[in-house]
Length: 450
Image 1: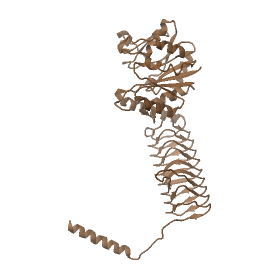
Image 2: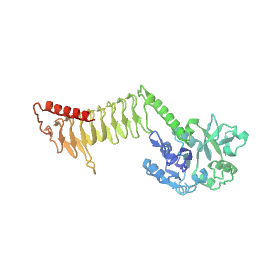
Image 3: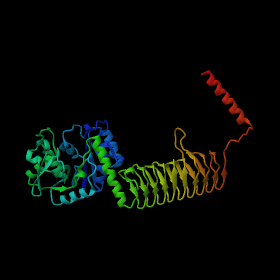
Image 4: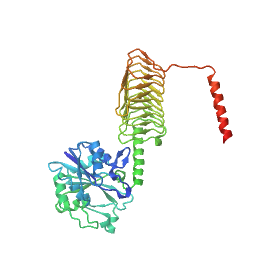
């Protein structure tokens, strides 16, 4: 079935008490909006339309950074969810298929649930996603006759009998595109809020003898984020689910509550993750790797058998090949590190390529920035970089070469050569004793004066 997504993301989110649009608040390293887009992407949609309002420019930038093919429409006046969904009519005017309406502040709807809605669309004109609420509160209620959905009533417009119903509306729905926009165009705003409710299309569809039904999901999938407390609860829920999935995938975590995943983290089986590890967006760790305590990884790839940390930082663009070791207080950024290479202590490797079986000594720095431009360092295979070496990029060190400890390397080093760059050591016999005597006398004089 041909699918298009319409994601409603125009709300200001007043209860967030924030200048940031509600749908851009981060959950597991990505805006709430991106979570909705990620779920919808599982259906391989032919088109995705995001309806923005408050902070539209920022919403547009976030959506396009995740999927550059997304169409962004501004809802200049916020006149309700029905009015918001209607804004997608123009960009989908030639689309022939089913539209699924999602919400940018509802991040947990599962791809399997959307697939069930698509299946139900095969036999019904309109499909609504519902859930049995433990505490129905102010949710809209789904009114059924048998399995047929007759209407959705908002809490503020519901009778006492209707408020006693526990089957609630998530807001997510699926409908043929032409029919959806036809129904939306026929909505009125004769209700307590004076708004055009998306939910009213069910009753309108029934007046035309069209069929509507409900697909049920777990209440946890429908969690909408309206406050910072709810956002924190959603983060906790995401992390709990991600940790359980990691266990099921064969990952070992002795202290799982201290490990934090991003929305797109991929971890291979038999990986060992020590306590207090944080994964930012864009991380893939292959099977059999070890991520040691207090490490932070973002935008990087770690191949099998590699060991990272403790206290290591891998920044975007880092690519570690098999059996690499990146040790304590090492930072790597935008660098490719060859198989078996070791960077074990107190080093910064940025904008660089390192070959296989190379050893980088403690305190080594690739000096990649000249104040305006970034420059590249290339280190070959089986190179020994002595401790406290400064590699002033752009520079190349050939295969099986060596740099002496404390060297500042400003020009290329030939393969198998030894490069040294140090000031000569000067020794003055007895001078240390004389200096200490002078300093102690000066200190004693200062103390008498005070």
